[in-house]
Image 1 (spheres, rainbow, N blue to C red):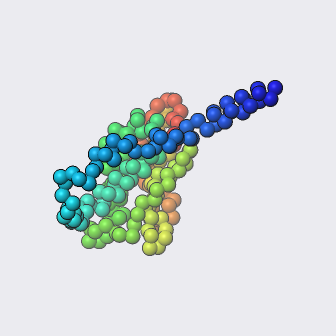
Image 2: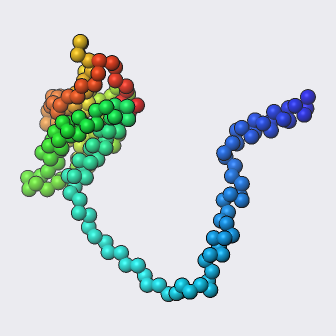
Image 3: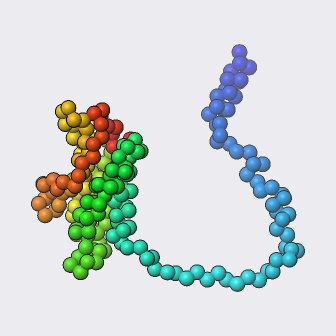
Length: 191
């Protein structure tokens, strides 16, 4: 009986630690690699220091924010939804989102407002939030971009993209556009 318990214990430990223990012989560098780098080789010991010139980024801040916004929307949709509606989103909805961002995030001189940024926490499940444009100086939201699922009888499910502005305490829905899903229920966000 005692031998039987030992065998079960060994078997359970082997299953639990499977892949956790890596033998030292697998992590060591082969001796061939050490032999290749011999100090008696013909390679010169002196080398000139590498000089890296620091160039300012040439990207447009609005283009960067637009890419970040697209990334947040794709993250919100998740792979199941994004696979089916990504092309239509890029062609129809994204230009409108970029247009709204241009009007909100540029000052009177057409320069991007430096203390505005995009939040990075889209709502999962059935929540509407995609991203918000946030004023880091005032510590408040300026614009809220949302997407809602609409179920229209006999038509099916639609994704309604809209935004809210701080000017009216985020009450009014400003329509961006809609994308048809299907007559079947779409998966949860970020699924």
